[in-house]
Amino acid sequence: MNNAMLILGGLELYRSALIIALGAAACFVLTAALYPRGGLGAALGLFACADLVLTVLFCRFLHYYCHSEQYASFWRAMTDYSVGGYVLVGAVPAALAAGWITKAAGLTQNPARLLDCFAPGAVLAAAFIRLSALYNSTCRGKIAVKSALLRRLPIASPVLSSSGAEDWRFATFFVEFLLLGAVFVLVLRFFFRRRRQAMKAGQKKDGNVALYALLLASAVELLCDSTRYDSSFMHFNGFVSISQIVCAVCILAVLVVWSLRSVRANGRSAFHWAVWVGWFFSLAGAGVCEYLVQRHGDWYLSCYLAMAVCCCFMARLPCAMYRSVCAKKKRARKEV
Image (cartoon, rainbow, N blue to C red; front, side):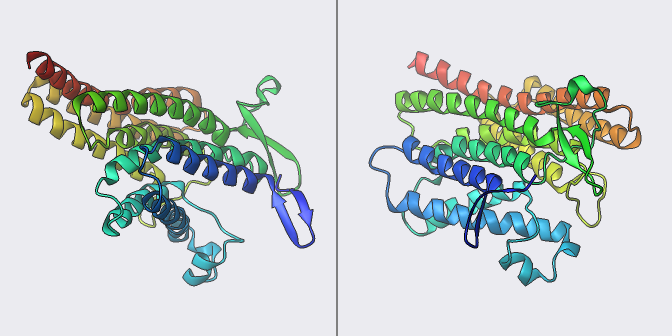
């Protein structure tokens, strides 16, 4: 599955590497296209370079932490990229750090707008990264697909066993590619709607697009990472993967930010308590589903359907907080 597409002397070009490179290029081209006119140049260049370097370092560091036995040493893990792997959620702190570096360098006073323009492309790049798995070590699903009718994309993909035989398993990364593609469309649509609203209201700072992208992408990763057989875990926790933990924290962070804005705009009410209680019940439901799917190997379908519903609610309820803020601003503009 990891055959080279093109060999030139000692240089080997792999399909997976080409797809990842195309995803990164599409990300930064789209960011440049969405960035306001007159804002291109040093700020965007520094952000792109910093984000690319930090994403590789952070994603590799998380993989080293979880799989240190695969590396000879920490230094080799951080310098030799011919072996080993990455944990994709490391891209989140990398983007935040890149925005802070750009601001600290004095090239922008509005990193929130920079992250808003970057968010749609980041989701698209993540989708390309998941797609590339079809051409290297395959989609790492732990669900065996036994029906011959289902042994095809987007349901299943073949995994080569140590003996060379094909073992058809759930196409985790391809399904995530499709879901992230849908998220990309939603985020891009949200971006243009937010831009129109910001122009009407005369707002200079936002950040809501980045929060929205983080919310939806985290919900997708939270679900899909559970279906992998090679998830990365912390040393003290073998139950919930590090990706699931980071994604849950990201969704909670978005809920907190939009809740604070909603309470400031509307005052605390029963609506807020209902959203908070509903969100924590959804989180608990996802945790119960994760427990059951690990304890009962034949409950995959029912457990993942229930987990998908819980993840949808975890992403949907914070949006209710955001909409309450927008409704308050809309009423205020009508009164003026």
